[in-house]
Length: 219
Image 1 (cartoon, rainbow, N blue to C red):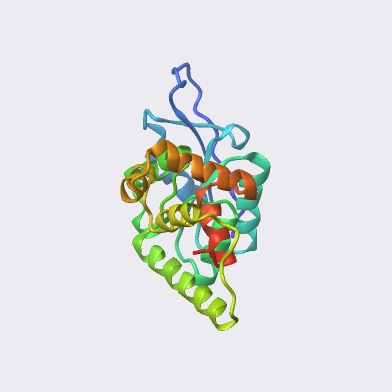
Image 2: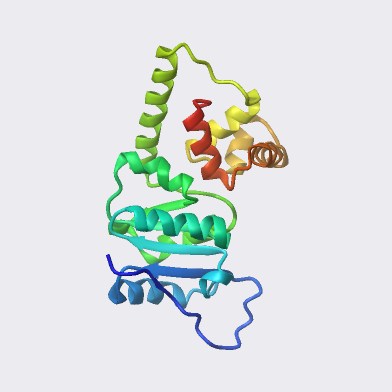
């Protein structure tokens, strides 16, 4: 796979105070130009260098070690929120990419400018998104983890009940307002529950919190 290519910002004097700073990485110039062309004209986005990005869109065929290393670096060293657009993703890699910091994922075959923009905006707001079929895979992994723990006589511990409830609903794809409605909490309460959990366990974002809970068998 060719080296990832950073997208340079477009010069100009446009007021960008309300725009989301985005960097884009692609495996080849054609893909590079296609993604940039779909994002450049959007008023809510501003293309910047990696060091200034709030969100980074990473395009890849598959998730190999190079991509995982890049995702970890972007998330942990740069502090950006990666949105991954990928052609193929093995089930075994699903939790791995989440743990690498990915907050939203799109299938490359389904990625259109509007969908990419929605994923970027969601990521900038701290929300995540997965295609419906990947949500199904995630639930299968949850089932396997839970069955394995039951077989070993283990039980989940360490999370308050409402923390577990919030994480379960995040894993199902609900946003803050939907979780609040389902649990009869205020949105502020949901945010406080999640913030407290993430601070206590040193988790980077919602997707990382869900991945942690799955790994530990809490949900």
